[in-house]
Length: 431
Image 1: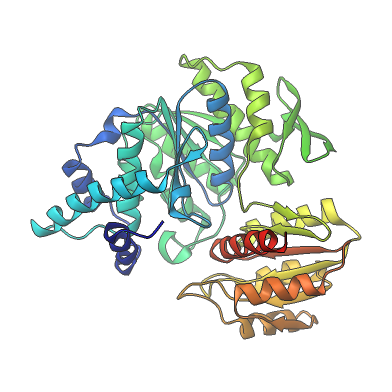
Image 2 (image 1 turned 90 degrees about the vertical axis):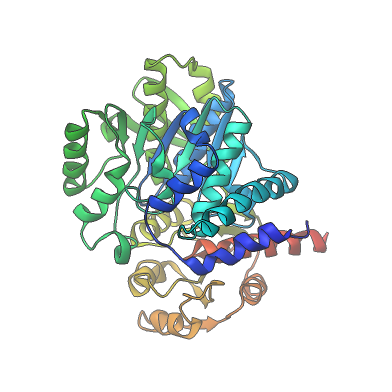
């Protein structure tokens, strides 16, 4: 689709950057009639696992027959990915129509003297309008950044507030300690609601517990003692959790079992308030859940993996998954990171697994130069080739790999989104 002037307008609003505040989005939604006030939500915050947890919850609810909206951030390839209903992303025509509606109200708002909304706020507003128009029974809503001042946090008390694993990330905006970061994430907890949390560091859990007490909320935590990995069957991890046995999950990695458990506990809370969701829907929903860019296998011979890990916690989860699934395999590691990340430690964690290393750059003004990433690998005693362009990095990795090797692209969602698009197009052309 050729971009309309309205969509181009939205793209250009990236110049307003990230400015955490609820003021502008509240005003904009007022101009749009506050459709979010007529929707039911599951609100999901956290550092890692938000997208996968949202995908699993959405899959179960859709399987159970509920019209389920899902809002995620960021997208990998196309902005359409950010809003979907029953797993189907918004069409180009619908996206253009919504952009016209929201941009018109944005311009009116600015002309009347209010501050211009950020790009994320405009996209969030489009999603709220879309889910209202589609008459969604429930919306799974992923926080963009933080929680307390994130644009998604204008909603009333959600059916369930979900907090996935919390760790260090975006410390320039959320704080330098786990307690500060958790305080921002726990800002989604609202009066009288149910809260489901993944296992957390004690300092993080203490903050969540205090927030629940202050807001009169019931806190449900995932008991990892009730979580048991059984085996791997083809593309599925088989596991038990509480009363559920032989659950199949199509997402790889031990961390995904935690995300799946959080999703199941969330579904249990919905059942308590009247949602009709059978055990069969839980089994089928877990099995059919997918989340692009999270230890996603794009191809075989060689095995080609893309993973959006972009902070220390995510990189450690990626390391564990590579060891679990590909021990003894020759691994070609292709990384690209943002300069604001703890990139030396990220390299320190993954470098020992790599037989060959390629440093690239995300398409971002904040990209770390590939040559600096090369130096990080060299500090680990690893030779590394610089391939600044993502297309060059993909071609180089494929040229170096044998059929039995593993190629892993990681370090930035911006990067793996472009890698995914380029590789799929490359594969189609080869056919």
